[in-house]
Length: 206
Image (cartoon, rainbow, N blue to C red; front, side, top):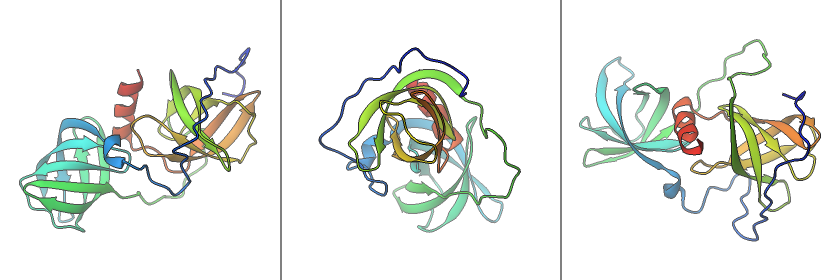
């Protein structure tokens, strides 16, 4: 929170001359960002029927599953991963018992504003950050949640400023600076990380 104090920002700055990502630019090799897993799951179809599936890999915006039930491209259903939660999914392709899914954004329902949507987890990890018009550089985060994180910046940012944050293994996340305290700042992800993906991210960072 803004009240915490630090003697100096713990930052490892590594400006990259190549691979500068833009707001709407996808990673050059997105398949490498997917984490190979083998998780039991259930596909809950629109008519209420269910089918057992296995999640083979998982990323911020999609996954690959093994399914005995033929799934036509364009079919929408809810994917429930055992112990990790539910995600709305859309079938992109299906062949030989394997389907590629993209996660559909959930509709935003009006709700009373609260200071934080998710509990933040304390941990130290390096992440890649880009400010508009500048190159990428590595900084340190000291806590993270599905909806945001605390970042130690090289240059003090401004409240409301947009940044693009990159965790190892995830796609680029657009974020907005919500508060600033010296060189520390809290950023909120414009699109929160799905709970199941967030649990895998924590396992990787710890």
